[in-house]
Length: 365
Image 1 (cartoon, one colour):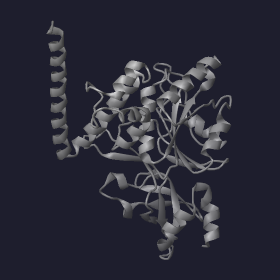
Image 2 (cartoon, helix red, strand yellow):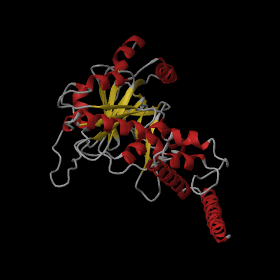
Image 3 (tube, one colour):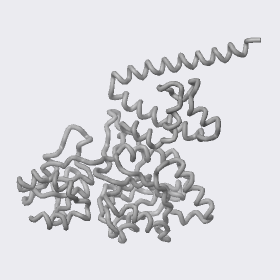
């Protein structure tokens, strides 16, 4: 296998000089590079220089669920054999992670080595800005560039209303590109395709957000099954049951994912800070460096809310995501749990103190 042949075959899937350098030691062992395009029950489909092969993951089954083979991983695979085996995974550049619903609070990697996290939100229902903020925070934490895609734009007849919805999404995702698209009419698909032409993207969202339809439109073929929305509750069925990596004709690759009912934060404090960049900027002017933006005097964040510069909903969402992230971390860290209890007690004491001060001021003649 020549390097030129390897590059020509794998480039559409994201192969570059960096991956070639990472793979160098394994090439000398007679292994071949490949990208995991699908994982299913202990086996995975891996695209290699010789085509797509079915490979066993027996030798890469770690105790840490965060290191389990995932769609998007680059791997060193047996050149021949029946069955072939994935011998090792190359270090991930990025990983989109959410917390699982298990009581152990494990993390789950939804996609590996992605450059863009495409957050699909349907305009067939009321725009859920809180969900947009949650996905954006996870996207920033993953190392990928978030892109918010408002799907089914053809259902919004009034251009002014559509512009208003786009503006609302932009306000809830500062620094993030928001694109309104319609797979039915083709609106916005050229813009989105150009954004995703370089690198690998993961498509995320709830069931019924139109992800599979959008994936088909971007791929230029019916590569994903599509079913109608349920009339009873307006929700979609899970048409995509596994995460699949698809090369796009306009360039780049796309990982489609099953609909996500829940998207819990996972060690995402940095992502939350970036998703609420304007609040972090206001916080720099707070009187206290550890200001919780609740009752503290000299809080620049609360002042921004009072002045109308910061929507109260944004601050509420920011607080909610930070609490959730801290709670999840505390469930697995006894020392952090102790620190949180002490901090809660201090805040409660401060709150009582501020209440007493206000009562005392009212009593004064």
